[in-house]
Image (tube, rainbow, N blue to C red; front, side, top):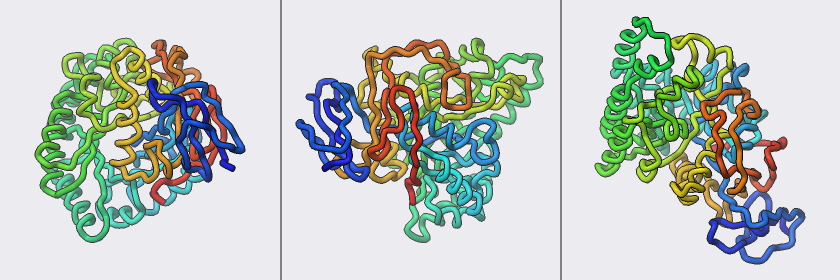
Length: 432
């Protein structure tokens, strides 16, 4: 007898209803007729997708847990349909050493209710070999924090590590050029303006476009696999696409806030819409039409407190929570006829699993982990950050009406969210 059988579900709107058999957390059958199981979950014709994978989150744990922690952050993930998250290294302390990486692994293992992986920091290049042995999701490079000489040495160090043995580490890149950001920030901060729009002017599209070009050149020079995080300009996406045609092993990521918002939202939401890279002008921003040349949608879930966001424009931290809004925003676009379920599967399930080498995730196939999100394409929701599971109770999407929401999240055959209620679960390290 199976542990669970999900009955009367559809993999696509036009598909016939099917049943999915689950045993020991794995998919063991996909067939027309239901099987006998200890637990029957009847979806009444609803669409079921692979559990979503977010390759770009900030759980703020350890050291910044007044903003978020692995418990609240992964509850937010489960509420939004995500079953796997990859956490960025800029915590306190950052995961720049093997010791701190191991410590964060313990914290995540004790708190996370979804499966997880960790990116490694790169501020201490001498630590890279030791970090590499701990199977990080990637090495994260913040180009806005380092000069070109440091970056060249860093890329060389990672390349040497990859060539020295069985390693084939991916490099995830925050692409904003340090010199350009410094120059424009100095210039703009000396002005009398105090509106949030000035911050976007201080980190112009040029900073990203130049950084992406540099990243491509270094990827080619050192024969590295690179992933450009939160690309926000059409120029950047086109540069990445052109690099692929030239044989560069590069992938792109976009966020829902860069897709659906523009810099005008800084007038309406002020610092609550402040993020890095900034929201772009209507003429420079990325759009849904750019998704065919995009590899991954990541939320860049970056929570802060209300008090922090209410500081002046130069002191308020950048970041927007996104785990609970990403899928509804995209499902709404399906209902509007602008994208398809195939694109959601590609951008939030299949490509993240493949690019970041997450085994047994990203597909609904026999032998894979029984990770799913069930969606109700008729259910309406007015986004209200007051009700987020995340500790970050703000969103530039507040008040937006969407149709299509996740109503159930299943992790390795266990229901961890149903009808907006999140349940206790134990997340596993996906690279162990």
